Image 1 (cartoon, rainbow, N blue to C red):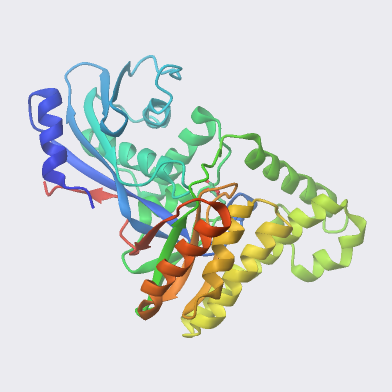
Image 2: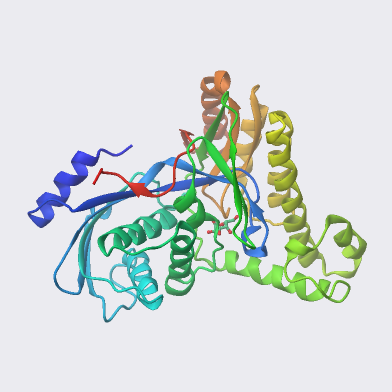
Length: 387
Ligand code: GLA
């Protein structure tokens, strides 16, 4: 956890005066339900105890000045003329959120911001969602806006979709805004209804970073979305009422697997079976069957690797090594894929051995080091300093 006193001192050094407020928004790990959010499906993420912090103070003009401590960089823009920044691409997340708030009819005053984070960047732990949600919440408090967590999540997603250009779903921003300590949220991405589910007290969420950097903005993510749209278009021939892959059952897909082009069929199979796994795994967890939950995590990884094809050999190595450790319930890639992190659910007593075994196996198979984070499910966005 970052130290709020240090962040306050950094703010004072830059701006010559103390911040008015400080907020934090967490990164996330998704336990199951991958690449289902933009198919109106189900996800089961938890917010983690790593977060992006924004210290802020209002200004009496319409400028937003931002210091990005971790990048050693600064940027400034005027609220009446928000465009993308080629010189400071990181600032697009902040610009996009401000623009979204204004477009939604909220009025904003200028602000001095200072940002720092311990969510690793580009690792698939949603550092960008944490930045968007933290920024949005800072603006909300500074300008005394009345915005619900769900609305904040949608605004932050909007910033990513339209301003940064990644067609991501709602999962990351939603859990960063609405996460609950010691719980994961079963979220229905169609109507945004959700249910917090307590995590087993004797199991730990262990994240392993492959250190292969993801390129979410790369074409592959948006390509998968198009393939899903194509699957819906084709499946409508037999099921005219479906709006998204969420509406197709496993049995309905099986009935027409032979009629679909192979690639589109594989993509649809992942999404449809993953929705089914997400619901079954949460039911297993709620009935105390952690082992069944873990087996479904393993199946999820196989489906992401073989049908959705978003894994890479390094992540497969991490997952296989994890699955071999006694006391590991299950392991899979988490987030968009193409690099980034895996998530494993591990018996508390087995974590030390897990870390040693997985690190050694990864090193010997790939020549790379992994960084392993034992995470605690945390609350969503909030104040980092009391008022
Ligand atoms: C990224 C996106 C999410 C989601 C996941 C895959 O994290 O931002 O919306 O689609 O990939 O499950």
